[in-house]
Amino acid sequence: EDQVTQSPEALRLQEGESSSLNCSYTVSGLRGLFWYRQDPGKGPEFLFTLYSAGEEKEKERLKATLTKKESFLHITAPKPEDSATYLCAVHSDYKLSFGAGTTVTVRA
Amino acid sequence: IAGITQAPTSQILAAGRRMTLRCTQDMRHNAMYWYRQDLGLGLRLIHYSNTAGTTGKGEVPDGYSVSRANTDDFPLTLASAVPSQTSVYFCASSNQWGTEAFFGQGTRLTVV
Image (cartoon, rainbow over all chains, first blue to last red; front, top):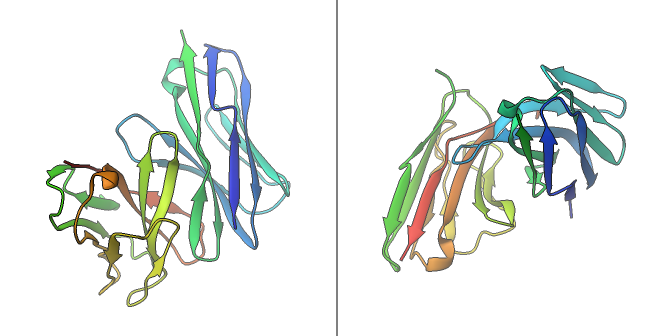
């Protein structure tokens, strides 16, 4: 069975303080690893898809990387508007399996 | 604007009543999914459909049914609602290559 574990559960950062979120996974037949951002009361918002070890993708202050067993979401010089829950999901065969998420709070 | 539309946005439902949550997408995605999101448990897959005319069970299918008569619509039905089905329900869709997957805005359901 596919498993996705995210750490830490919560992360409190000062504005400008860079950090990384971890997503470790076990899956048979990975078709893609997804990162989402979710704001309170909203649906998950698609950020990135990564397909193979060594791949990296960037969007503004966010950079996602992928190895054979885990993915990292790096937040560089975060701003308060980066506060959200970040979800990782693996796509295998017929479904997306999600981790529990990391809630990031960025203080001004 | 392309995307996924869910209805209703929220609903309070008496236990034992039947309820259908609606989901429509206009991206011509082959695959569609229903998830429930509960505090501390994350997003759990209820049912999925890889293409029109086919459906499958996810990890928490009991008490729910789905149908996929066409590409765009994927309704979720609670035949006889129970309080444990109180949750936020999200519909999602993805293309056949798995390169993108998008979510609706969610339906907040309270069963009393």
